[in-house]
Image (tube, rainbow, N blue to C red; front, side, top):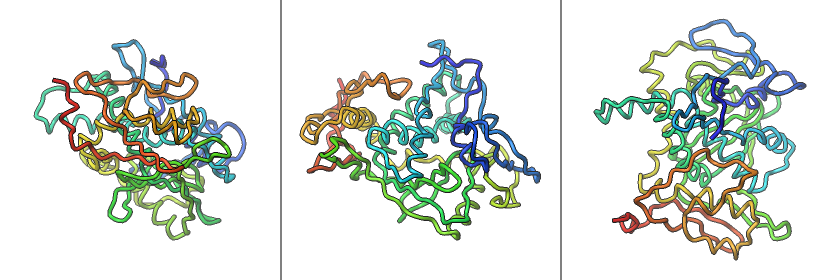
Length: 362
């Protein structure tokens, strides 16, 4: 449990916002970006560290601390710089840095509380969110969505020379790929990740010469027309503001949203869990720990096959990022792992077991 009470708690890392600056020197968080806000015609500049934060957002009073535990940010800059130089990460970095960063975008923002209140309203309950309720829910969502993002198909795309991407305050944008949900996650003014959801896929390959696993990361290029269309859509899907290296990428039409419009927009952009059934999310919520152990300990395919239960206590790396809170269900037996090793490849299957009810303790 972190102890950052009373500090600025960023929901979009300043080291990411700073990558959309026209400045090329100095700390990323100190660099200025162009900012456009809903309902305001004037475009202005601001330092990255002064944007996308809120005091007390991650406070967890029950444990006298916060869940402000996003240490994967410490390695984001180096990882993304390497990608720009075509140095692709090993699975260990992918699991501990890129996967939690993208996962966190679905739950770190202040709009998460709005979405949770909406769920409570639909349940016809008078219960309301305390900060502990909200942040406990954030931790649970993180625990379950990590395996979803880990299993997704990833593609790293750069843009054609002379074009620039903007960054929405959500850090991502909803799209579709072959009728399946997908998201784009801009990580600089010239690059982004495309994340396509799937319930089963090859997530890594073992390289015996290096005794290491590498993620199945595709690469591609966006045309100037695709960038232009994407920028307009990212600005439309941003909740209150967006950022860019140059003001020309912004659309002039950027109206204010009412509270109800903001909620509708947030629900549509962040709707990731409904692609999976409750049984699928529950039965695979600890897959991240298994993959983290395999990649960090550089287990061979033969040794990786010995991991057959989906459990959080398989891996507790103290010198690497771990989820801030682990919520263990007392009424469930450990599920079979969805990890399948075929030759030198690692597959992850998030379908629920047909005998799901047999795992419920009586």
